[in-house]
Length: 594
Image (cartoon, rainbow, N blue to C red; front, side, top):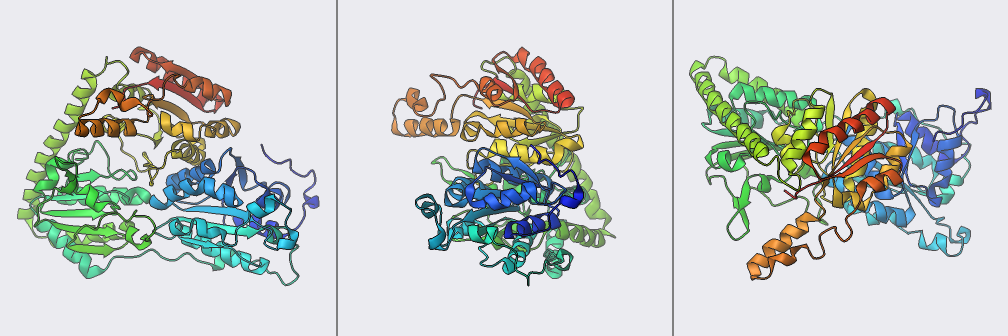
């Protein structure tokens, strides 16, 4: 719902209160949305968003849970690279939001989280509620997983605080920030000495360029390698870098493994070897890792005992170009295990890749023999790529009639309907089957996962991405896991309330399957009954009726669908709702777990 505009622009009030200044800063930085579940400790900012000014921007995105508010901001940031604001209500709302903030932290996504507290002046607190909703240092709750937090103590310090937070959020490596405003500060009149800054004078820091000599060493290693491999994970945070990665792979005939934190490399490219790391990494003599947060995980595999160890040869040289290590903290182990590397180059891959390509081209200028070797390698890898894709297609076809519906059958049915449209997979992946069977060819066609693996992120992140992309003609697809949706199902109401066109397709295996699988493995290792693996994990007795749940929240829905032949007609009807009515839809498909 939009605020009612004043009938006469002349009646629009000038900034009078602290909360007006905060809204002016949001507008000055061209932040288009503020997502929140309403709360009393930021009621003055809420009032200023609704009643101050005459352009009614930023637009309010109304949510039913703080975790959804932050997840929406996270999804928007993944889709655009730019932050929007999520507001959370004092200590209780911040605790609700903490999981989503941690997801954004692990995913290196720029999100501006704002909240209220207090009054800090104890003589102005209402008995009871103002006391339990006030903290002496509210930012302490999330300080270990935000880039920066602040609680300005005067109106004159608010602009500098907000501008610093914005700079911190958007400067690579990006991440969430938190700002806390005392209730009295929001409500107080603007002092006579206050001066609003010109935000144009606060330039953003330049990103980090690579060290030239190290980059030349990396180029030489790659050119001379017999079996080089590229592992890319966060390159696609800057979509322009995807084209550079393709150019580098083509130039040197190097296979690429896409780690999936973002879209990094086209799935149909002849050098794409995603899904075959166990075959090609043990043969690699040089590995170029590009913004791989979990480098040890990318280069390792499970042993018979379940432990992980490197699958690369001891003599393999690893080059890592990254920025993520600059955000390492001690509270959580999101920094992952330390992987030995031959060269670590601290740089933004969007800057490093074009320079690396230029150096390689210069080194190859007069070396026809090496280029001939690349031609042979490209031919061999292309054949491997095609065999890999063909094997997946045969497996999908062979599982087409299985009941419950198999994930590859669902992935195939969805792709038949969407393949000729301008689509984006904003959440989910059907345990990898979407990438195996779909043609991912454009940057930002896949936005990655939650980062911190915290359940409840999917629907909010999907809504945030659709908020950014759907009105530009993109078909936004959410392959929504059932257990994940149950954490924040009210996000569907937000999508309906704001008429956000989003196609939600339930990957409904009626289980918290990750835990069910752990229970199975544990039972086998202890020689205990495997049949009990579903106790405490299966979503049954009763089954959740997601279609009915969605309808109750205002979303067009169909299902549960249990016959493979019923998937396509239901998807076509749901697409009409998106394309004609410009509203969200949900199709509930009952599936196998894997």
